[in-house]
Image 1 (cartoon, one colour):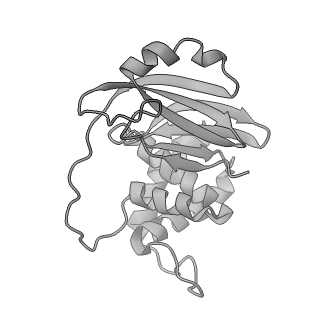
Image 2 (tube, rainbow, N blue to C red; image 1 turned 90 degrees about the horizontal axis):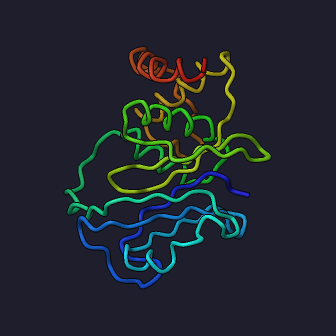
Length: 198
């Protein structure tokens, strides 16, 4: 089972398939179906018919209301270092377990900067799973808690700093790179130390 992923907010109603208008209210239902987390975004008029009893349906996890914001036009491509959010998306898209700890640290960093919000904490057989939402886009990220020990934290922070600086490694590349600037490690350490202690 892949218990970590992200799902974008829909641009149309899951029920009637009408596109959402900018500023329109919608409802989101998060459920566990077919061995994975599923998201349904529903317009206000369909919610009036479908909303009743949503919490009693099989697999229901959570429900919330939001306001749709139309995506801005795509900016021109520019060569730039990965931001924490774009890196988190890339790590989750790989589906590789080796990035589990780095994904968690990035999510914590983004939560502290108020760029992600915890919508739900789930207790699974494999441990605790956080469901984060990116408020501007409505994207959902499900990220398991790797239960990092203090002695593991520094190595993961070095890896995150290297990923932010260099991006994902290419096949055969030494990883993480030997030299990671001390200020990058310090910034990552500052963002995550309190979380690991809690």
